[in-house]
Image (cartoon, rainbow, N blue to C red; front, side):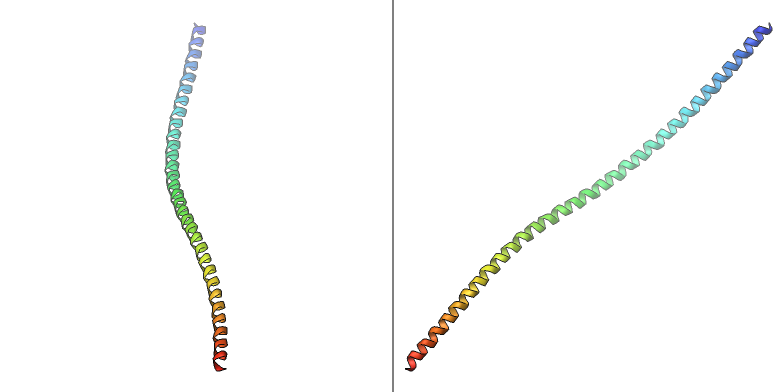
Length: 115
């Protein structure tokens, strides 16, 4: 009988140990579930922040594209103005040359008329 009592006591101890292990496992599972919820919330918050940053980057990129287009247009306008300036300068030089030639002729005609 003592042997049976000892076996029963041993069995009760093992059952107690198994219960404690099950309780500990349940606590661990509950803590893991809470941690998963927290991590999911952090991931969602990170996604929202990433979406906002992405919008900001897209806005800046669109402004850079507009600025690039304006710069391109202004570069072409500048090239056109430089061409116009060069042509006007050549025309001014030609007119100055013609003026000098006309002044020389006028002086020559004036001398001829005095004679």
